[in-house]
Amino acid sequence: MSVSIFESQNAADLASRLLARKDDAGLALIFFGAEFDYKALFAGLNGSALPFIGCMDTGRLCNDNYNLTETHATAMVLPRSMIEALEIFTYDMRPELGYTAIREASANLFRNALNKLNINEKDPDLSRVFAINLVFGLMSANPVLEGQNRVSLFFQTVGGSSGGKLDFKAAPVISSRGMGPLGATAVVRLARGYSYVTGLTSSFEKTEHKLKVTRLAGPRHILEFNGQPAAAEYARILGLSPGDLSPNTYATYTLGLDTGDGERLITSIQQGDNQGGLLTYNDVNADITFTVYRATSQLEPRKSRLSELSSQKVAAFLSFDCVLCYLARNQQQEIQTIASNYAAILPGVPKIGFGTFSENYCGANVNQTETFLAILED
Image 1 (cartoon, rainbow, N blue to C red):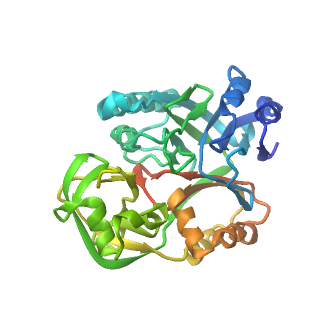
Image 2: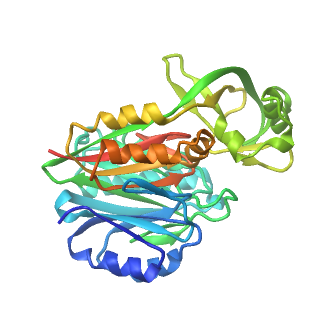
C-alpha cells in the first residue's frame, strides 16, 4: 500500500476512513483546526489498532494547498511496509507540573522507547531512525527536548507545538496513547529500502536594533528591555506605539541571537501580557541581548531547499511550519505562491504539514522556520 492523504470536516467520516487503513497502517498523522470535533475523532479511533498522533493547528498543508479552515482536518497514513518499528508514548504537560517533572518524564520515556526498539542512543542510525514530537502548545517544548537530549545528543527529531488560534486558549494533542494537555512522541525506524532527510528554512534580514533583557517574570515572560517596559521599548525602536503591536508585528520583527558563525537563533514574541510585558515562544535568560530581525520573502529560500529533494524519490513530505511564517507570508502576499512551490518542485508527492507554535529540530526549540522531514525511497 502507498501513503494516503485524507481530508474531512466530519470526525466520524475521517475516523471511518482512517480505520479502513488500520490493518496496514504503520503510523497516522492528524492535524486539525480549532473548531474540528477532535474529541469525537479520538473516541472513534481510541482502542483501535491504528497507531496515530495528532494535534490542533493554525492551518495545514495538504498536498499542494494550505487550508486555514478551523473546522477542517487532514491526515496522512504511512503504510506498515514503510516502518520497521514504532513506539508511541505520551507525557503530561500541564503547566502546573513545572519544567523539572516534564523534563524527567520526557527523558525516562524516551530512554525506555529507545531501549524497547534496540536503538543505540550513542550511535543511532541517522539514515532510518527519527522521532516526531507534538507538544501541548501552552507549555514550552524546552523541557521535553532537554529530556531527550539528556538521553541522546545525536538523535534526529522534528515536530512542533500545538496551537489553534492566536488567543492561545486551547491546543490539545491526541494519540493512540491519550488525549489532552500532553506531549506525544513517535519514535520511528524506517524499513530497509527507505531513508530520510530533515531540513529547515528561515527568511530574515538583520536590523540595527538591539534589545537587552533586563527583567523577567519567568522563562518566557519579559518585563523589561533596555531597562524600559518591554512592549513600550520594542514598539519604540520600530517607530510604533504599544497599542499598534499585533501578531503581524511580531511575525515581521522577531528576536534573534547572533552565534558568530553566520547562524542565528530565533526567539519570537508570542503576545503581550496586557501589562506592558511580552511573552515569547521560547525560553530566554536575563541579560541576553537580542538583535531584531525583519522577515523577508520566503519564496527563494524555500524553493532552493525543496529543489535539493527534486532529484530524489520522495515517498512522503512532512512540514512543520511556524504560524509566524504564515503571518509573514500573508504580509508578503506569498501564501499561494509558496504552496505552488510544492506542486511544481515535488509533483505528486504526498505532503502534510501543520502551522505550529514553535518547531523542534534536532533537539532544539526553534521559531519562525519551516522544518521538514522527507522520507525517501532508495
